[in-house]
Length: 212
Image 1 (cartoon, rainbow, N blue to C red):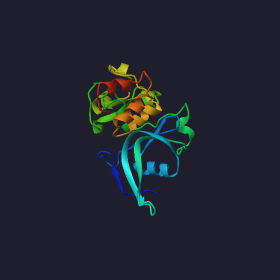
Image 2: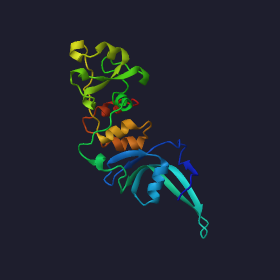
Image 3: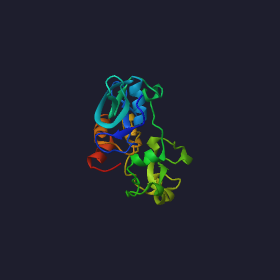
Image 4: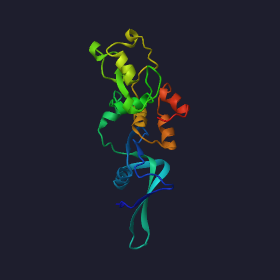
C-alpha cells in the first residue's frame, strides 16, 4: 500500500482537493479524498480513471528492481463497488436538504429581492408556509435574506405582495454533487455538466461564469 508521502501532481494542489467517484457507467456518486481513492486502487475497485492527474503517491522501493512504486490519482475515477448502498442509484433518490446546499443551489441570492448575501445573512424560506401545510422539501424552499424572510413571515408570496424570482427545484444526483463540492476542477465540472438535465438552471449560471 502506498504510504502517506504524497505530493500534488503535476501542479501544486491542496491535499484536500477532492476526487470525483463514479460507477462503471460514469454516473457521479460522491466526492472522496486522495486517501480513499488510493485505497480503492489498492483493493482493485478502480475500473478506469479520467481527467487530469492530481496526486502522485510514492510507495516503497522494490528490492529487486530498486524502483520506487508510484500511484497517480486522477480527478475522476470509476469504481466497481458501491460503498453507500443502492439508494444513490435509485430513480427516486432525493438529495438531503441542508441550508448550505440550498444556498448553493440559489447562488446565495435572495429569491425575493434578488441580492446576494453571505451565508450568515441568508435563511431557508418555505414558499408555502409550514403553518399552512407546506413541506420542508426542495420544491417548497428557497433562499431568502433575513429581511425578506421576516417580512414574508407566515404568508405566501402572493399574500405578502412579493415576487418569487425563480421556481424552486430538486437537484438531480449530478447537480447535488456539484453543489456539495467547495472547489470543482475544470475537467470535473465538464464531466458533471454532461449529466445535468438540459433544462437545469445551473447551466445558465455556469454559462455566465459565476462561481457557485
